[in-house]
Image (spheres, helix red, strand yellow):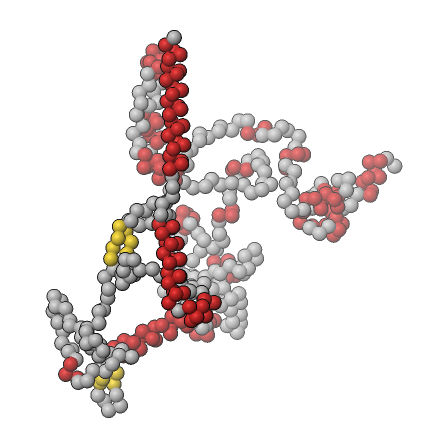
Length: 430
């Protein structure tokens, strides 16, 4: 027996290979001839595996069948074609020009021929631009792929207007294959597809029957029960009655917190207090003074009448002091003093004198807690000593530093430089 016959005897069948692998849908008719079919199926079913191009077993050269086909011209995308740039370009395509005219235009071209607004081109590329259709990872090109119809864009049960006109369907009428579906059943490839007159109720205003525009005969058994679904729409009415009301609030929307509700209640309570509450006797009371204020002696002093906008209401001043008999001041005007900003970070052009009662020549003396005993023993002598020390300290702080030595040294340096310059000038003359 030859080696070829031995390989053929030991070769697995397609059915046996499908039983051995985890993904039998990936098995192809030539996979059984591989050296290790199980490893081949494992690699083919592995995630993100790029398949081998399908023309690997073809005898003719790649793309040999497209030799006689005429390649269509390139069409501009819709968002570019709507700008009218193709029409503008066509006006400048002139093959009848002489060689001299073409040479002249190359040397001295005429600028500003594009009669297109900048805003139109900007909107085309930045507002109306659409993404081109791209292939997925590992999705390779093969011969004739551009001629295939993309069935993913089609949905079962949705008929285009062109198809309805071609089938001769009227508006709101049934499809021509509805009668056969009622006889043989719904399509097995789409078990969940709702078809009016088969497993779903017919539209309102439509009639059963075989007349033009009729919806045939409802598929029911001998006892009158629907065969394929709720063709009379009975269950839909029950579901509408049993369904709870739909919550239309948006997911993730923040509700009113308890603190906001309490604030609203407090605001409402304050408004009621301002407007006045109702007593048990039925008489309304008006509150015009806050809590903590002194109640006026007589109600005649309360003036509830409105005043014109130009008048200022009179505010009663507090009573004069019993000891002095003078009217107390409500505020004190601070003295303003102009200063320099200097090197300070947050300096201002003026300051206010806070301690106005302090007179010129006054000295503040601070005592430590341990010096209180010495104050009791020494009395006025101890205070006089502290006062002299404080005055001497302030005198030293207010006295300016002695810059005489520095100024003398600088003047001496300047004089030496001038003398040196004079000597250099004398040397240059010679």
